[in-house]
Amino acid sequence: MEDWFGSQYYKLLYQNRDEREAQEFIYNLLGFLLPPAGSKMLDIACGDGRFATQLAQDGFDVTGIDISAASIARATAHESEHLQFFVQDMRFPFYINYFDFAFNFFTSFGYFKHKRDHKLAAKSFAASLKAGGTLVVDYLNTGYVLPRLVPEATITVGETEFQISKHVEHNYIIKNISFIDESGIKKSFTETVATFTLAEFECMFTEAGMALAHTFGDYQLQPFNEITSPRLIMVFTKQ
Image (cartoon, rainbow, N blue to C red):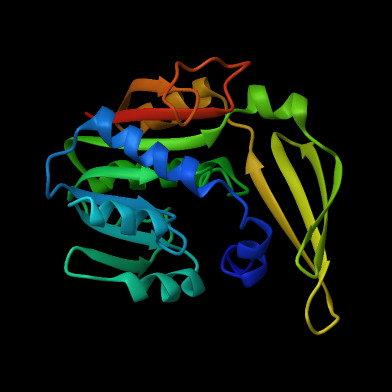
């Protein structure tokens, strides 16, 4: 899926995501965590580096990693003394016992086919942190999303018409996206994301040496409710 995540059409389809809400989330999260100035931070699956860049501007030493070489190529335009980017598969450790904080924003987890790969990623997240370090995982809340799943939709952005279908299969939400590109060629991509629950996350990250410290249900950091909360935001501490 990295070809899709790094493509111009991925950015086009999701260009209307609420950037202000996302920035307010970062602001609210930092207000809760109160990280000391100069803290070493890892943005896992950083994409084009928007939020890593914001964190660096807030006075932190930030590293962003992503499996998409195209995304990292765009992100490196923002590099500075306190901000750097690398192509890296989240399943494999990066800078062991090095970071004070690690972040996995905006449902950038759960895309692997096998559960063992998700477990590898969880262990990799934990390995990157110092003892006592903090990990934040921001995920969709399946208890909220599944009852509201829209099976078919058409979204037009500019001159591109995206045909989107969604269904649930073997504990994954399967999202098929097709469109005609600028050359008149039909392209199709598939996004799959696991329907992990809070209990499954807690089990996975406990095995990786992390302890669940807090949960939130939205970007305003309201309490988590498994039925009514749109997000599942988890704060873990490395043991």
